Length: 200
Length: 200
DNA sequence: GTTCCCCATCTAACGTTGTTAGGGTGGCGG
DNA sequence: CCGCCACCCTAACAACGTTAGATGGGGAAC
Image (cartoon, rainbow over all chains, first blue to last red; front, side, top):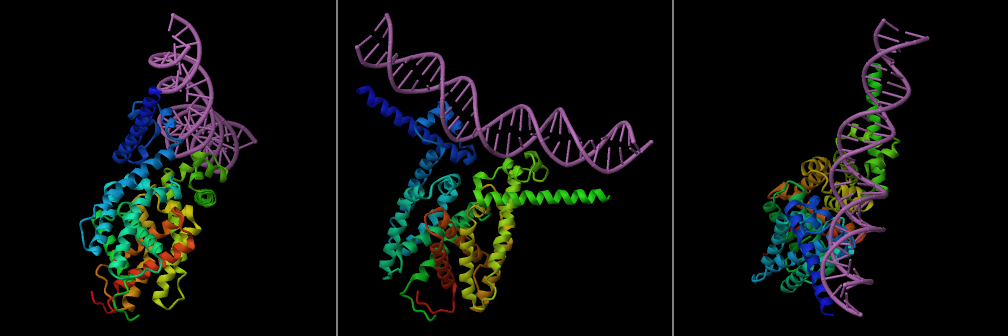
């Protein structure tokens, strides 16, 4: 079956081209332009071809979002090379918000209601993993045992999401949002530290 | 012009009924069921009537969101009667997340991309005002001068939004999200206090 | 009281969306 | 060379937001 494998390769190729076309349309013209017919036209096919590769539009959008989370993972991992764990945390916050600002439409799709909660969680697992690693390193570096590690992760992840959303949902500029995210994360971590004296 | 005022009253009445029908559909069946034809049917009119009261669907949705923010304002103001300012802050966080959990579809519309950033800011001004008042009271109570008050407000508002979104975007339950929001806000405020000793 | 006009309302339609069914065509196996 | 099969397209459906034109009934004028 030599033709069989070739056809399988071609199938996978067009599937990839559909995803790339979708990403291009999304990033360049926004979510309102992300149409089955538009994508099909860009890959020089008729609309129904898309349904040979994706069950429906939501499945395609999920794939685009997964791609976005992989991209985010790559950018968040760029915080390597910084030995100071607190500074790396600040870089994480900054990079997260920067990503949201540089890919607003992709970010919108990644967090939009079209994606099932479970699927999103799975797609975001890699990016969240970076946060988990950093938070683990931070807690050991400062000799802090967090009461509930997953809870702390969710808090940080949710905080970053919320403040990054201010950056493009509201009139808050991206550079300001980066400052806000850094300050929020700094305050959060400071609040969790037990190696600082306190009186109340 | 007796008939004139009556007609004006009727016009305003149907406009109000359209909004109420929209809210009812939204809360009971979700944003995907929020359709011009569906709303028109519920108020026993044909679809084009809606366009005599709203320029387009986005304008109607904005009105629904504004109603949602007024509702949120009322619920946030219920934190009166608590003299302890820190406890009131905790109640604010809890009530915010509770609102998001009890009105998920309304909350989704309030923060959805269909609403212009400026319009949302204006609609949310009242609810944000509650936070501003509380934060002012908190800073005076603890003798803290915040470096940038508006920045602190945005941080808290964004954090609450992000963590509340975890509650219904992801699999985090509402009661857990409330705990998370409280812990996040507690850590944030603790990080901003200057009446606690520190060593680095 | 009759007539007429205006305006509120409806029906019908357009263009777009996601999605599905059915037909045609070209290349591969016998 | 023939037939079949897989691929691809055209056409269509339902539903959406939105607009234009038809229609009808009630108040105003005589």
